[in-house]
Length: 104
Length: 153
Image 1 (cartoon, chains in turn red, orange):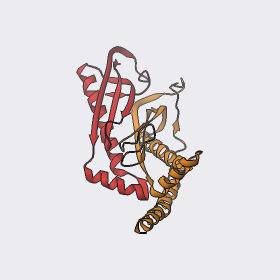
Image 2 (cartoon, chains in turn blue, red):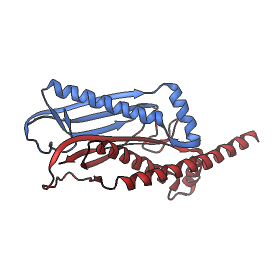
Image 3 (cartoon, rainbow over the protein chains, first blue to last red):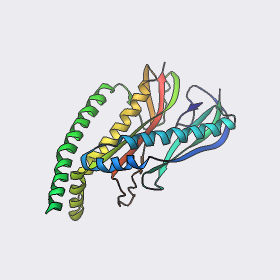
Image 4 (tube, one colour):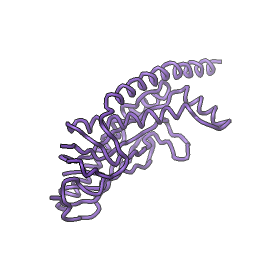
């Protein structure tokens, strides 16, 4: 599966459009991580737990989007976009969407 | 009295430890940016016809950076009089640049000469920091950088 966030896959020809595919996920860390993040607010620095959380959320959202594209028989997703929202404190909602296509 | 002592200790922790962390983070950012100057990032989508694209892949970079106690107090005071909140400017700057550097590291892993086009930055809010500035439990800046890496033959 090839993913790009431009309209095409460079070097390959788009032969068929399968429409919009998307994947979303809401993930949170256990309360210990939230407490640690609260402590970090005193000293500053990177919140590794939350960076990890955001990374996991991104992977999960992409995986779901790719699964949908595979079900449609696509071999690439172009014009991928990420969107985020705040459902609850301590949780990350990530939405990945794009156009499923078949390229040759 | 005890409250005031706790407050002063927290502000001092933020000022010294937070300041130290910010400076060492900036040193690391400058060093890595200098080392990856060859890797071009473009925010446009145009593909130069001269490029021989061997591989295209989505690359991403993520970074979450926390405020420190000194910064939040300084920003709170700044809010009273208004104006430039420089304490938070450096925070956002660090998060964006770190996310871009992580994206660059992923792009460089493709090997050879790599160009990243259509670079986008998206901010998230795990910590419950609202868009209108009301903060949740934890104040932080969260950035996702992504783009299409083209490995050139």
